Length: 315
Image 1: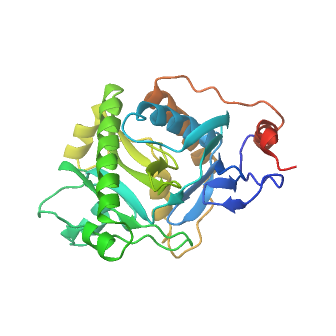
Image 2: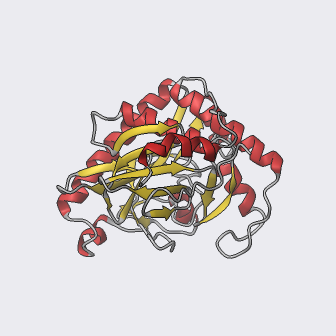
């Protein structure tokens, strides 16, 4: 009852269902974005985690406020703990991923590709002899194509982005500058709380004037990988995966049991889902320094969201 599995609200117009978020475009040019409790990886939905949507929305809110001086973002209002009303943008067709470490489990992660023997990735040359989860000399951008139809994202180089006309040179320069500055701010503030911001993804869009604006979410446990600083060095030296509170442990559980890109996903145990919920809450509290207060008002999360969005219903 306390899990927001879906957030279809017929009184809101122009519905679009994403992997994790439900979206509605309003006549005034704004977009209602509702974060459900779904968790996705490997281009599919794995399960639902109680309170995950609230954690994501409120963690992103913290970071949007902490980085507003770096670049403009899409936020207009927060009418509910799971909801942001943002400026509707034309999303750029390139997903910007910034990485500070040789890490990851997905098919496009630099660790996965490195283990396959690749040394030229995303326009960057990697030396031989790097170890799993090793810090990179400097953070790098590893852009991928953004497949809006649910297909697989594909690695890109900056040259390919320009040659294919996905972005202009000016747009690429702007999003690169923004992304690296956002990542630096994220690493700085995370370090103050005993965390390492390992890697993260950003989505940018343009408004009616062509201005590039940060969209979606920022530095949440869904879009980012965090490690605990104090445990990193021992884990690295032992060749073990550093302790984290991102969704890697669910992805790792799935990978150990199937080919997640081709096989049916086995049912994820309730105990693992409960653990994941606690991890998301812990992540919020550690990242923001604030206590997590679940909003359990109304009979269900959907009823609460509906009530808080009634003023936006189309008559």
